[in-house]
Image 1 (cartoon, rainbow, N blue to C red):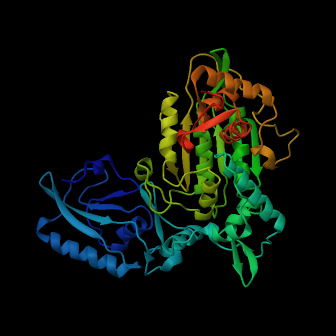
Image 2 (image 1 turned 45 degrees about the horizontal axis):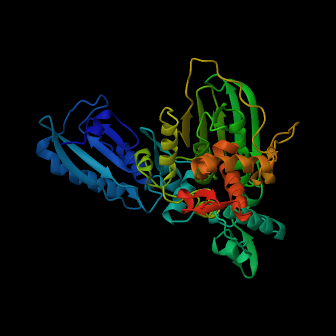
Length: 488
């Protein structure tokens, strides 16, 4: 019996043909597109309306040999299909299964690599452009673009020192232990820098982490009126190092979503309408997993009904939406992912998507949407639509604001990772201490809700309270809680 999901219609991984085309090139484009993307099944004997037409049972083995030989003769490098026949409604259909290829790019021999490489987009097979071919070539060689040398880019001591200092700051946020500043040698070991004949060379990752050299390596943010991209209410564009862009874009979103307050045990707890950890996860994922060879930017759009984050590049390495929802992950930018992991911004375990879904569920929000649209990947985090008038969003950012007037584009403020100065340190400590006295302990998430700060800033503040002897830590990392230091 054929898998029932086939009868949902054609898709990125399924295509129907009523009969085997006379010209093999007609269906060979689909075979190549499957091999270059997520794999798939070409089913002969079912028409576009999902009606079972069937093929000649008497010649089934002859047809299977014909398909095998056609694929071998037409495709380069060699593609090995898995061909079988099945009986559905007393009719015979042919299933040609193609697995994601390891020797990409695959192309038609008769047309060559430049004019014969195809990829799958939605339910169609289309010609790959030069940038996509280049990415496929790197996939085939198991190398990533961000670890390649950026020819002609000068490596300065100032850029190295700032990057090492910032990495240390982020690493220190998740522990009370003393963290040593990374060294130039470690940047080389992490492939951020390369040393050739005693000369330091910058990789593309180093450039992204320290400058605004690449024109399209930026984040564009916009607040729209209504639910379409029609009327702008506010817009900003952030450049600079990619981790600072994340901080700036995160603050832009917080400024333009609603925040409510409630009194609990004499303590005011502020809560945003969307889970802040999910917002941050979506933005970080868009930055880490985007295709930096694509001449477009990460875009963050806020509508009345949703937060929409769009990043250049489809799913990497043949992954499907179903696979990422089940926790499978492949890394497009290996060096950037490594540094973000060192900075405790991401975890390399494919858990980000599920965390976004779980946080939305905790907030009783509609299920987030994950979509491939053309050459982009989009995440929609839906707001809770209420008949009551939406409260006017707060005007002031939680962290120190970027002062107006602002000229576009804006370079991300390097001080955004520093603790906000909008609340006095004494007041914050009192809020934390009162909560712990009432509940026995406090988590990072609970502290974020009380202080209304970003996750990294909250971690930093709690760590400072530990150093000052006000709190003690219990548990490791994600399960960590804080108790009063003088608790019996």
